[in-house]
Length: 328
Ligand code: ACO
Figure (cartoon, rainbow, N blue to C red):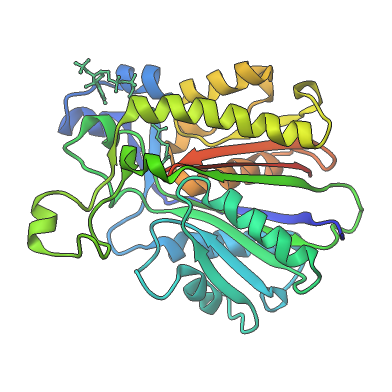
């Protein structure tokens, strides 16, 4: 089987910065509570009228530029998201149009926060079998218009963003490759985290909106427990599959949901704090965008270098969870 490489990374965040003090004015919370319980200091949110593809397209363009290819070279575009521009068509098709690409197979993957990990794993298989050369994988989410600004336990957590990678059969120097990906789900736990309204079960209606069914419903402490267990398990699975230990990992990039979840997972894996990439203080939980945004930032800052061994793990609504181990 041929090797698959990450040949470019990119990200894009909205300009509007929303500090914790904003929430102190609208719900019963404090900056101190939010920082100590979640690690979040501020998050980015779109302006009215903006949508997912407005963030995801520039993120993709940056990844394509780093890859040194042209958008027309892409023959696969996968967008991990649960907040597309519209119900139909897919955001992947809208982004394909914005990139002026005509030949790619383009589709969205709804796997909540691990949407990027799921997309990466799917793209890897398409390229591995030789049928596709260059794949664009985007993780992007607009959570700001899906949260309940009257529910203090959820509204403080989320932000908007987009991150992307280009996968290809060579990175030009043979240094680095995707080693393995691991995906899991347990649909029996879907009720612990969901957005119940707006789909076919509870279609758009005044009644649905009045009942506030179009926003995130979450049993936070239940999600917390499952997230820790699942991310630890799948990270160990990825390391065991490749015969590496936590000491071999150069960088751990967990889903940026809550700093306490991230620190607990890293500790249980035996990965020291200084090897964990943290961006949650700046962006909050950006769901499917959190890992590719963190990856891109640290690649561009020079922290992550070619040859580094990187473990990514994520968890989210479904429940779904997954990990990818790769050498950059
Ligand atoms: N400000 C002040 N107090 C608050 C706030 C707030 N913003 N939110 C909740 N509280 C209160 C609660 O009302 C509760 O008060 P009570 O004891 O009087 O009832 C108290 O704090 C403790 O509530 P818990 O829910 O037990 O608080 P916890 O420490 O678990 O933190 C949190 C809540 C931050 C939501 C945490 O459970 C969490 O991060 N869970 C995981 C969420 C997650 O990872 N989601 C994403 C995964 S999937 C995805 O990304 C889409």
